[in-house]
Length: 348
Image (cartoon, rainbow, N blue to C red; front, side):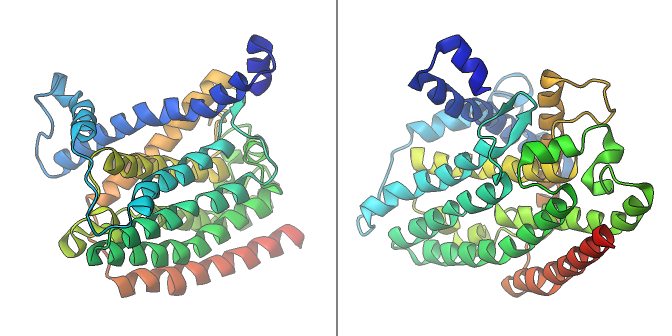
């Protein structure tokens, strides 16, 4: 992609500015669509009509919500650490946005085609933990601090099953570069890692139960990583008012909101890239190419965004002890079994 921009614009800093801004051009409309989707899905599940009056069937309501947030007074508590309070939302969004650099949206576009792409995403998104802790501490509010501490404990705990489930896919594909991982799965849905990858039939059948378990655990751990229900203890409204962002309003609250929805797609994109063929067509050569690749990638990603919305409005919130039990005593042991089994099958 950068080579094409250099041909059009020459070797200038503008090339890198445009390349870095492209994910933002996706995130902004995606967030508006997802807010509308979340409200409509939840309304249908609860037999309501949701947004109906702002635009046709309420399609302009997310735009109205954003305009309302931007017009609100940007308040800072008098007892807050003002420097850290201002910095926290930007740090959270930076961690989310930087993760999109290694996501392959199609065969023609990936922000940074680095060999350690998955490792980079896991590392850079950890910035969000620092930002959340900073927001909770700087607010000088006990509910904000409780929410920040919960978030840090939760994200650190669920990074273990996330990394282990990523490791299963890396063992099969032999690469940490998401573009290479996607090319490995090209040729149709039967070559996707979730079904054992493009390996001999005997190996595929032996790998199938372990890849399926790893795939589901990666998705579950991803939900916990982005603090979505049933793992939304850092923002538990019935316990902590609004959690770590209780004291935020206006533009800063909107940035937290945008970072959360960006993370929802980022988690889905990682699942899609590692286990579901990324931008490859599920029908082999049919409906393939750079433009179709972008369509397939976004369609698969939005399916998992929908699944996260569905789960949010279906399951109750876990208790703190249940949250930790699920990570350390359920997901992690299962993944150790999957890693040893996959390694044994691939080698022997």
